[in-house]
Image (cartoon, rainbow, N blue to C red; front, side, top):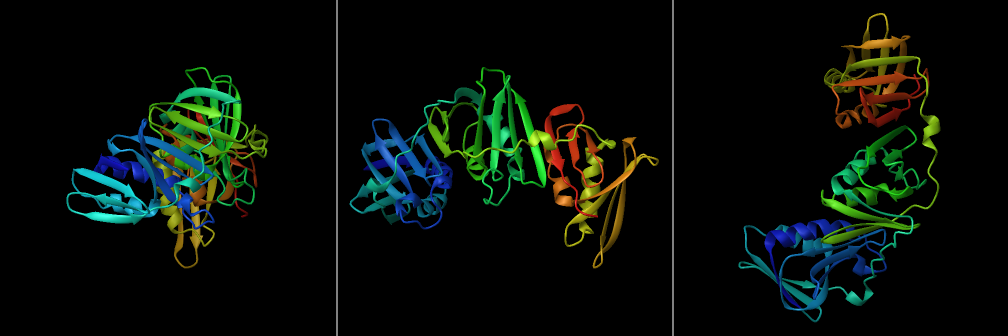
Length: 366
């Protein structure tokens, strides 16, 4: 195989594809590699870690067709070292491949292509639909930070996505907090649900284009396809918790305040939080304000007062400040609402006038 590509074209493609190669040693070393195929369909790069897989087409010139598998990390670091414009030539013969530019030549050991698994593509038996890649990215990246980092309960380490009545909903929870994102679809999307591992979903969202993509879903996997590529991921097959049951329907107190006031006050208060990162949040109905309070024996104390419209009774709750801060960058409205359902019960945060995003957080013990 002999092919020629632009430095930037190769570097960008390798950076994207390498996310899907196996990062740790396994009994199948080829999973740590990137396949480069040159043939009638052009030049393609392919990788998989058996959880996810990718196949993308890149622009280049084929002088001699063939296929080679190169170690992903070595290829990534090699292509990232290229400077300036110009062409890169990859020549493969036997157990080595030579990557050369006008000023450098590197010889890489190859991996056995015959050991590389095929990328299964779902048949779309549950759903097949088109959607803007930017919308799918938003559905995933808005909720992914709230998925559990532990895989003990795989459903909590996943992102739940469903479509019903023209509305696509994504949700994630780690049992301490919950976030739900809704988008109204302009196209026809069949009803479906899927549970995709959060790590896989984030890699997918960081790779797909903003333009229209086609999504295929079956019982065990999903695929996102576009003109020059496809990404596949396995799905989690256990049931997702019925999280609607934990969203409060009534509240004892609701505060409306400016996001630009709440964010800096929370940042300052966090400096004085204790080893548990605890801050107290008080709804002061009489004073028409929200007060953030933190105490740390080694640092000191602080109390930040924020003007707010309070509807209901005064109440004080304690939270991990990081959990209060997490959704603020996602709200698009100037005003946000904080709705308390009672002592020891959930707090719900929303953008005022925006029903597309709901964030729920459980308080800490006082």
